[in-house]
Length: 255
Image 1 (tube, rainbow, N blue to C red):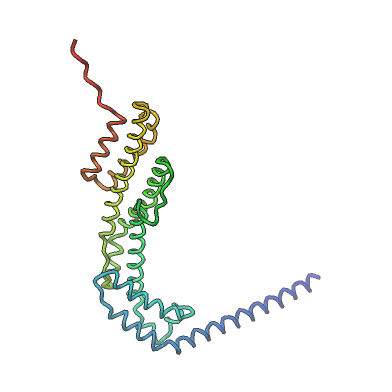
Image 2: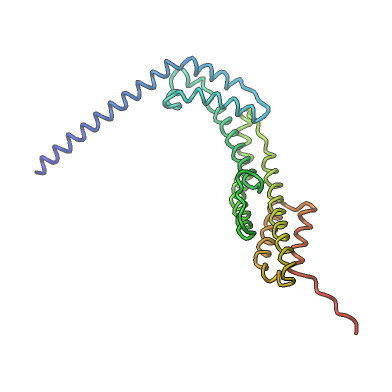
């Protein structure tokens, strides 16, 4: 029985090898066919990529869209481009740099949009507590990504410079400014809710909202640390919120 089983496994193994070889043979034929069929297109793309000049990321994105449309015709881009006719001519590093710049631009713009309470990526909540939670969660997603991109900025810039690919790093500064706007939004929202409640219950509003007011203040302080400061309007909101939680002690009256 053991001999029969071993023989059966050997036959099955041989069949698997045969299938693999036939599969690879078909794959190789397909790659070679595409090298012949799309050779002129690839050589033309290589020249265009090498010669392309742009001063704005929008131009790169438009150019890349056409490049990707053409390369999508290839079954396996990397394997086709390894052909002897193309290997020495294909500007792989320059194309990779363009792709990196375009992807980075999309990433940073998505982070910007994610922190806009009036933008399409924002779903308003039905109460201030949940809305504050959403504000904090948005920032908690954005901050580590911004920190990582800030750390890698010089390295990325060297790669882009080597291939003469422009990139606008002011997007990082815009994200910092938008984060201040997020703190402003959270504090203004919470102060409005507090004032509405204070009109109904008076001084008891502080006790009822103390926890959420403190969370808002702590969040605003985190933004202050991240951004390196506030503008005047945000500073005034922070001061007002802090004064509600820590009202100045009244001076004793003279006897």
